[in-house]
Length: 591
Image (cartoon, rainbow, N blue to C red; front, top):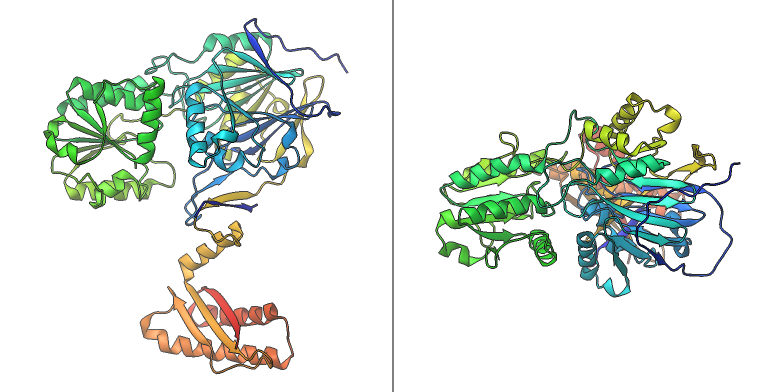
């Protein structure tokens, strides 16, 4: 079944200065119409959570959307695949969308593209080469690429789209080809940092383009929309190079096989592993669909360099090599139950089983909420006989998000008039706001938006929140949800069933008279223990039968009202007598 999307939810204006470089112009499509003048910005996601990033810039009613990402479900979102931004506010405005701009290729920034691009009527999409290759891959999976307008953009190149010039600026993150985006509008320049850090010794790519950021700052920046993820952490974010020596030592000293688990998008990390494996004559075997896909894309585009034959898919051929010549890279560093590492730990992986003496390296940090799942995988690996190395004991992972001093450096370079902390939970963005206050910004220059809040700029360059707020609801993607179910109701039902079980009461009635036919049938799951089965079932039958007959005597003809009465009576019984709150499903069947 295909995944199903459910909705849960003055002064003369001065042209911003732009340094001279080649510029290409995108034609304005569609019918000319009267535009509402002015600059407004608003987030549709990413301002109250990690993920689901989507930020809209409205210039004279022309819309520029930055990122279209997914959010992985929280622990209480039982069974769903992920969430995507609520773009219902853009319905009817599709013809005004001038561009969809991507900052980098992580799923929390591109992962909703295959679901929402058709809803947006396929506006032109822009990004760096690697980012657009990853966007294309997601669209390929849904056979949407032929309808999409995918355009690669070079760092430093400026493209005029409508009245706005768009410029991509190199920043470092945990995936190559990451970018900050400058939008040079008639009202001033906006800079969206994307996810960033300042890495002065990056692996396999140049450092952040500090010179261009400083030049933009000198020319004048109206506002910055900046990453807040690690605003609470002191100092600078460690360099990717800092963990290289740790990986080198572990690969050098291991006598048996090495199994490395990391994010499939950490291509610079994977390049380090490839370089070290090559030095110590180890052949690399890849396990995990996303790992295979990203490595293939990166190799084809030249972002991952390895001699022919060094990297192979995991398979029976691994067992033909001595253990000391084998290195396996797999997915599953977050404890995902269907990913490669979890299946290796359980002994259910098709090609890989733990041998005594294997060294397993988790080159990642558990994301909040995944700690227990990761601990379970580690325990399983230990039981199987592996030696497990994690970032808790060794320097095996570094973040792609800047710490406090990275954020300070960004603001010192850009010197924006207004600061909009983005990308993070409320406490992260509040820490970012505190950093801005310490830099001398006043509260009317720091704008703490939530999803759906609109920030309006006047011709003087001042900004204030609009009295209008866009309603934002959760939008879930779940391949197992019935098409008729509303997402939030389904999640609520799953929570109830997970804690209280479920009971179905089937009442058979004559079609014409509506009188009961015999006693109701009772089916329960996860509710009644064997020792109380007979007693509880009898009471359920008695209460359901009595309630139906009372409603029949009152001549209640609304079937929904009858079912509500039965549900209420049974709820009171379960709450009073056995202190449980199951899902109660009464069914009335005519015979």
